Image 1 (cartoon, helix red, strand yellow):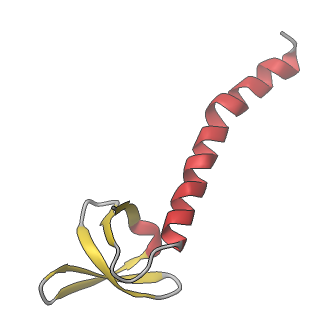
Image 2 (cartoon, rainbow, N blue to C red; image 1 turned 60 degrees about the vertical axis):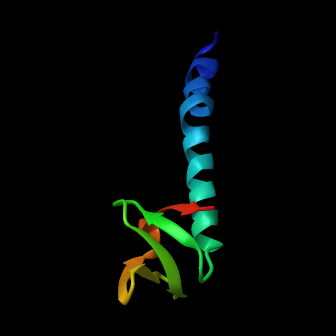
Length: 78
């Protein structure tokens, strides 16, 4: 193996999958709509009630809503 191949291998093995995962997460957050059920990175489950450019109003219980940053959404429940 040449030096270039030795340096390129970690890029494809480590960096590419991480970038792909980040792109998928960004796409998921961009595609959120009102009524979607989500889990935040801190583990709070809720339903999206309002969407703004950088924030989301999340209903976590009856008459309980919290305003969070879009970047704090971990997963979307199906």
